[in-house]
Image 1: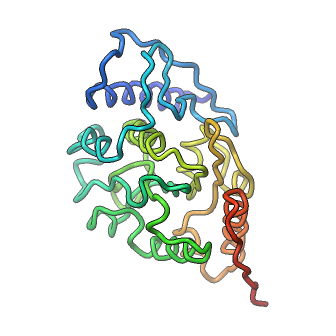
Image 2: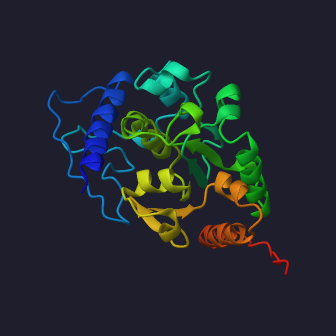
Length: 256
């Protein structure tokens, strides 16, 4: 386990417990034993999807509403990203979605509108969702970090650590049947690994019993629009999702 991952793990658990306290949860002990965290792929960060943390009194957190989580997030100042944002981008879609898409962080359009994936990359994601025979309103879309990193740079470890507890609570609330991790940071955060997305994609990984399919981020497809290969790899990943959910797989013909 790398030192950076250890730091993210400890910070994430501490922030998670603080967030639970802020939400009004009773019964948390004063001293909480931090759980052992396994980072070897495909294992996920060891914060269970049902909200159980070592030393924590038992409560049923998976029915915590998204509205309540958003309220506890408030006008978040937990990391330096808050200083440059226009809008916090919490998430959007069906609170009971069978499928959740998790990206890495908001871009300029998302920061302006306060909604995830509404810019060019969002249009690509919309086309992917439509190609799957689904509607955007049927799924849920969110990001690992809720504020735009300056210049769309990669999220940093402390920023991920501050936001991850709220992502975990979102996933607990929705309790989806499957998750699509869009790009390297989303996949690495959920799965607790440093493996590149090219090695992670194409197969399911486990996130506390929920299958996770890592795939390329829509912005990567935009940057490589002259090459149809990555688009077809993403489609292969989505067909696996559809089959897992027992949904029809629309036929697509690759142009030669």
